[in-house]
Image 1 (cartoon, rainbow, N blue to C red):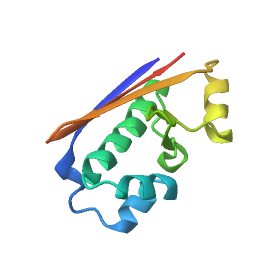
Image 2: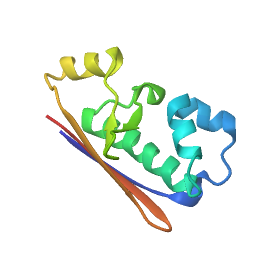
Image 3: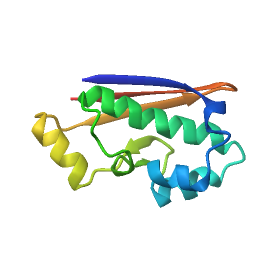
Image 4: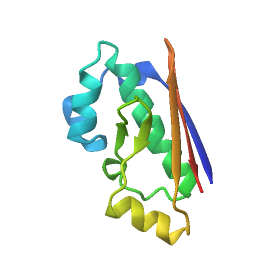
Length: 114
């Protein structure tokens, strides 16, 4: 199962903290806001959530339960929790791989679930 999403970064310029808090976890918000170019990162994390929804083919998923973290080496991943594990079990899948990229105007993410 594969999902991909691309978004314009400037889409996030006028979001309020309340808007971010509806979509992103506290961990994600704290991580992203620690960078100067935080809009690119918010956009990239949003793309991961959208790509995950597309890969699973279920638009009723709760975005805040899809948490993007980074390993010690900087590799992004989706945190496994009861919510994610139940979705994967239902689809008879066990592994999630993601990649995020961004440039001046766009961010993109791909999610592969097998």
